[in-house]
Amino acid sequence: MSENDNNELERLRMNAENLSHCLHSLMSRIRDLETKNGEPPMKIRNNETDSSDCQVCSNETITTDEKSGLKKKIIVTERILTTKTFHSQPFNLSISNNLMNKLNDTSSEEIIYENKFPITCKNECLDNDNEKRIVKIPGNIAHKLDLEFVGGKYINKNDNFHLNTNINVGDVIEAIDNKQLTNRNQLLGYNDNLNLTVRSSNVGEGNTTFFKIMENTCCSNIGDICEVLDKNEDTFVVRNINNLNNIFTLPKSILHLNVSLITPFPRRTICLVGSKSVGKNSVKQLLLKQYEHLFSTVVPYTSRERKNGEIEGVHYNYVTKEELQKRIRNDDLFEFGEFEHELYGSSKSDVRRLIRSGKIVILDININGVKNLFNREFMPFVICIRAPPYQELFELHKKVYNTNKTDIEIKEIHNNSEKFYKDNKSNLFDITIVNRNHDLTVQRILLALDNLKNQSQWTPTSWIS
Image 1: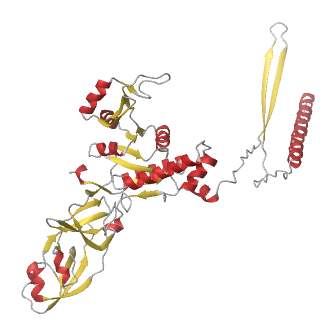
Image 2: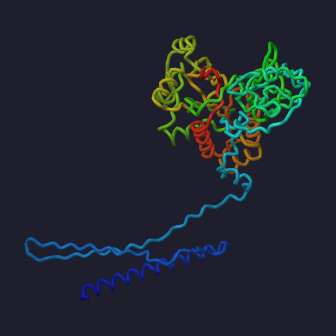
């Protein structure tokens, strides 16, 4: 090793030693301050195996003086020491553990499916392998069975036949005295008792239709999907698809929506509904910001003058009151209203334009607006954003969001959310999400949308007919 190298090495060692003293002094001062405040000294435990965090880089440059012809050699040596920095954030111990668990809960249990089983229909529901049973009936009444031949099976359509036997409407008659039923004439000409092999039909096995219950009854709840087994002038004979043995009669006047189970398909619009201050707009903005390649939204129209700081096409589209009134007459606005003698509204034409561009249109909308879009053209997926229970909402506003809302205002937000949910549940919700955390709510919405592409759905029949 040359003398120059030895000198350089000595200087580097001195620099490293000086840095070591500086680091030692800093750590000593930190410990002094921690002890002074009555806190135990911070200890950081390193479970990693020892390894070299030091890298040495050397750069050599040789230059020649033009006048004297002397050569000048410059060697720059860098020693890079990799260190780890820890940033600690105080934890607010006043937040309940229960709330923290729910804020961090990544499961989908907070999604309430209003169709009683997820928007989708699982195969095990449709392919129910019902147990067969033997029913004994007098041979002289067997001809009263009203059998419908569907898909190679004979299905009972006589609702009154179960009064004297154990055969219900919708039951499949498979065999007579252990002989497969292949012709209805096999039921004729008997006086002795017959042993019929019977089972309940699977969902959709017969020539049946389905509807979604839109109001509570003595036998069903809002959102139940029912299969119509028989009907007459005044009533439906139906069964709940989640309980095939639950067969009951409903008046034809009951509020219902005809639905069909169809193959997976994505929706064209996403409608976020809910009461004021439950986070609909925050969730919408997160979706638009994080997934701008998937989602878009419309800019509303107004007849008022533009205010300072507002941008045309960003905050509003500014038009005359006459133009907005013309759009209303032409049924172009899916929602509109008047405030301080000025009109506001959102256009169906804008929704159509965004759909044609390949985007899913996400809207923060009211119930009447949803009804105006509820057709095969716009195919909305309606998500109700609901506030959490009052105590959790109180903690969120006071200790997480740090809002200035009073206890009365927080209570009003909760009460309005519950009232909105109960008053409108019979309408058009597909799912309801309790919004405790905006980011998790976004993830749950994406999960629900992914299910739409992968699983069959109960969809209004008018959308596909």
